[in-house]
Image 1: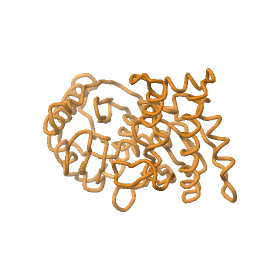
Image 2: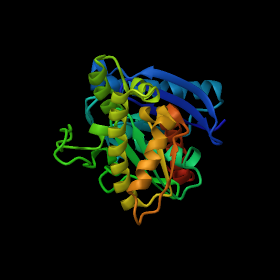
Image 3: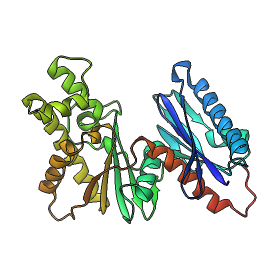
Length: 313
């Protein structure tokens, strides 16, 4: 059965699948990223995991994978196939496409994790059917994916979609990026967790606990939550003014709060728009499988451009 390898590399774990031409997940697997052992060990783990998947396909599906798609965090040079930088993995300028392709002997596509997840949401998830969409992931940080006619825009230098670093509160909280007042310092799951832990005096409390407290009417939780919603709405209106998306897909940990987030967020965005067209604002549909499914789409897209051609991995 013809299939591809889809591999989503995260800060702590890797999710993988063998994906058929119809999008079916023929085999799934997970591994620890092993970042505590250093960047070289992470790369070795990725190569070994990819080789295991390649062998599994040959033994159980009748043939080895035809291609591989790999999604990684940080700064990614997709055109060159290089993982340029990832603070949480500690690597710089890793030629992952060349390394994986050389080990497996197949063509490899390398993508940014959030853009790859956005690709999946745009084609087969919550943004399906929208010619223009913006996917925003509210996790430890905030990042986005700009979707245009079934593809995701990487930008001239691989930085497109970094909505988390729109300054929404000038002169505000310092951000590791070097600016002050960035959106992700106010509206990420990490920012809400930090604020709520301080407010309630429980260092283990997180954004999910804050959402529960909001639902029960806790005034401190409501204040913290509304601050995040207001900042997020400001950032999103800036983005939709520039991009004019038809659909705005919100995912990541904070989106798991459901209507506790989406009801006030839709209203906050509605209040801020003037001449802009209000997009449909919907929750992501694919959950934590989005990156892996998107990596599979990258691999199949690569095959569409390489079938019938001699390819050097």
